[in-house]
Image 1 (cartoon, one colour):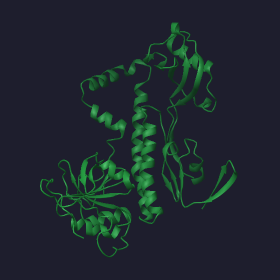
Image 2: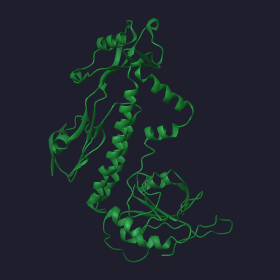
Image 3: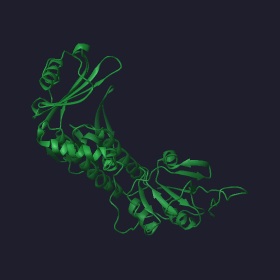
Image 4: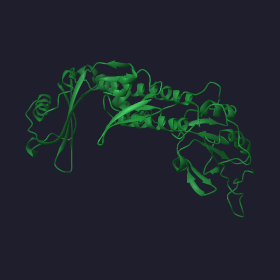
Amino acid sequence: MGVVAEAPQGRRRFSVGYVVGADGARSTVREMAGIASDVSAPTMSAMMGLVRIPDDQAVPVGWHRTPRGWLITKKGFDGHTLVHTLACGDGSSRRHVPLTLEELSSQVAWIVGHAVTMSAPRWLSRFSDFTRLARTYRAGRFFLAGDAAHVHFPIGGQGLSTGVLDALNLSWKLGLVVRGAAADGLLDTYGLERRPAAQKVVDNTRAQVALMGPGTELDSLRTLLTGLLESGRGNDFLSGMISAQDTVLPASPRYGSPHEGTFLHNIELITAKGPSDLIGLLGEGGEPLLLLFGEGGGRYAQTARAWERSLRVVRCRPAGLVPYSAVLVRPDGYVAWASDGGGPLADALAALFGAAPGPGPGPVPGLEEVPAPGPGAAPGLEGVPA
């Protein structure tokens, strides 16, 4: 497959195996791949700018709701004020028209009910609660990530987070497939995992926009939710939703581990090289990790030999208690398999990377042994025999 790109040196043609469209909401790659989307029309229009406002007209910092809409302001250190407006109505007819300072000033005045003088704009922008969600994240050798795959109201920084998590999910899978360490079918799991996560973001941002309606008909619901938040109940649910830490990947029905598909939080580890942690190990090579804890890990290491090009095997000791003797961790921090009811490791490795090409001769390649403890050493740090 060939791609033509415009470069400072002129037009250049590249031969590529895969194309990833991370080219924004108006994605050319999405159009080239013929990927359709589910969309919803905007119900609100918003403006934003970094401007100067005279002290005698300054609007109090914070969120302000009036019968006409919302005004959100934040004071900068250099004397500029970040101004956001949100008003009911479809402003999509002007979405491609550059926002002017006069238009932003007029919108602010209309919302707050008095004139507000603005000057020296650093930048100006307009947006809405228009939503788009691609119906598939893969079309053959084409993939979508970030705003090319999903667009929603920008609140809570979720657009940035979702795009970064898209890239993290796709990159390690694409890297393994390109270098022949995994079958092409691994790439199908990208959309299966990331599209539902984007749908959750679309849904929760639409719910937040609905609560921001300027009318009084939602006051009772807003009061109810305010009480829920002030009580502390529901905060874990909402924080997990906004941060995406509550994302659980689809688990295989063949396995029984309750940990599969969940995010493994950083844990401190002792390895043959000394103290480390999960983030440190994942950052060293970027490949999936098979962590072996305590005794009895030798059989898992032998099984992993057949997929030696696809993962790294580390014998280690956790600083605290863990509910399994072995765990397979993906580069994005999710558990792909665990020994506590997770079924045969060989089945999990085959499902993730494809059929095993067969083990190489000799000792287990890539296995990092923890030396047997000497006097006074921590118990349980036993080497794995070749």
